[in-house]
Structures are given as structure tokens and as C-alpha cells.
Image 1 (cartoon, rainbow, N blue to C red):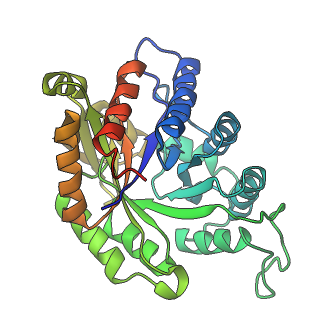
Image 2 (cartoon, rainbow, N blue to C red; image 1 turned 30 degrees about the vertical axis):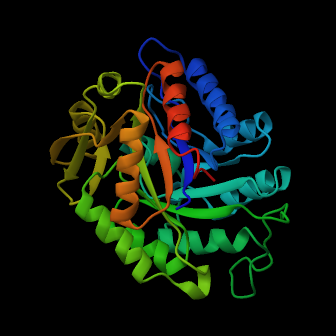
Image 3 (spheres, helix red, strand yellow; image 1 turned 180 degrees about the vertical axis):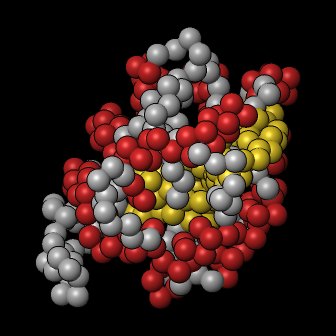
Length: 336
């Protein structure tokens, strides 16, 4: 089987590093990904966080496109609920005009930050369309002017590129899978955020079963997961450390995923709600290249996917780069 591999880099500002150094490492990693033959390189969107430098994926994407030659560069993802579909379409139409065939627009459904950053991003917004409505409008604006039935008929997100950005929907739940299926979009399930295998399996099955082929042809499921490969099992375990994931349930019933119990408390405080938090060991595929390859092949069969996006959280850039090199070696004969 042939596999498609990509990288999601979150531009993490590890202790002892600066934001400038974190972004410099993101650029180096994008160049390495191209050199190694990865299919895509995505960057994340996080707000009001001193531990992440990637607050504006569209700006970072433009720089990465200029620093690379052929690899597809995209967002993992743009938090559309905060923004005007028109402005997002303008940004990505401009990017796709500058780099035809190389731009991918991943849409995220999370907030991308704490409640106060959401309030700041949406300050002055008087219209609150559903994500489904915004997504439909965005997709329309990526390919042409709005139709006669639109309140702003004839509106164009200039420039219109010859090859528009490909749109992906990212998610961690059944509802995101359902939306991706209805819209006929490629769907990436973030196992590194929600590591419940039952939810992952149900979401991907729902997506494939209910996929709208009239809009999107064939379903394109992607599994996004944490991976750490090293030259020895012991080193891989040491690099994986004690990463945790915390699922927060607010009093209103809304759920979010954060990295620490401290972040859970801060999120609830800013939201002004009571909460409960469940801490779990992070699900990291780790080991030598042989071990990692075996697990990825197993996951491919388990979830019925042949496309993966990897995130690797290692402070030492050289060891992070080595992890991606080992992944390349592990699938050398099948790497596309």
C-alpha cells in the first residue's frame, strides 16, 4: 500500500527558547520535509499563548511558501468561526495565486485559545452564522463571485487563482465528521487531541459512510497523530516523556481539550463556568522506525486510512528532525 504523509508543526516555544527560535525551527522543518519527500506541511493557529508562536497561519504559510519550492503548505487549521469567510478567501486566494497548486486550507472547529482571545477576535461582530454556513460561503468565494441569491451578489475574493486552495475539515468528534461528509470535504481526525479510539473509529466510519459523493467525489480520510521515532526504544520513550492530555467539560456542557490541569482551570475561569477535567496519558506512537512503522500499518488497517499527518513534540530540533528522517526511512519503499 502507498501512504501519504504530512507534518503538522505547532511552532511551540519550549522552555529556554524564544518565539523567534521556534519559528526558525518551523522554517527549517518545512525545508527538511520537502527534502525528505513529505506530501504536505501544515501550521497551527493558537492565540494568547506564550508557549506557541503560530498565531497567524496565513502569514506563516506565505513565508514558508517562499522558503520552499514544491511541498504543499497549509493550515492545520484556520479557526473559521472567528473570521469573515470573505477575508479568509481573500487570504488564501492570494496565496494560491502566488503558489499555484501548493496551498491547502484546513479549517478547524476549536477556539484556538482561551475565552478572552475568542472575545478579542470576535469583538464588534454582530452576525454569528453557523460554521456550516460560513464553510459553504468560503468554498464558494474560493472559486468565483457570489451568486444572485447572496446578499452581496457579485462579491469576488480577488484575486481568483487558476488553482484554488484545497479545503480540508479538521476535527475530533462525530459532529465534525458529519459536517465533512455533508460538505464532501477531506477530513482529518486529530487523534493527538482526542485519543479515544472508539470515537476516532466511529467518526471516520460515519464520514466514509455518509460522504456526499456528488460534492466531493470520494472520501479522503486523514489520521493526525503524535509520533516520536528514535534510534532506540529507550530514547523514544525518554523523548516522549510524560505528556498528558486534559479534556475539560464546562458546566454548560461544552468540551475542550487542553494540555494541563492548570490550563483547564484558567479556561473555566475565563469562561465563568464550573468545570470537570479528566487527565489522560497522551497517545504517542513511539519507538524505533520498525516499531513505529508496525503501529502505523496497524492504525491504517484499524481506521481504514492511508493518509497521515504527524505532529512531533520534541524540544531539541535535531532530535525532532531525526524522528522525521526515521519515518522516511521506515516507509522508504512506499513513500509517495
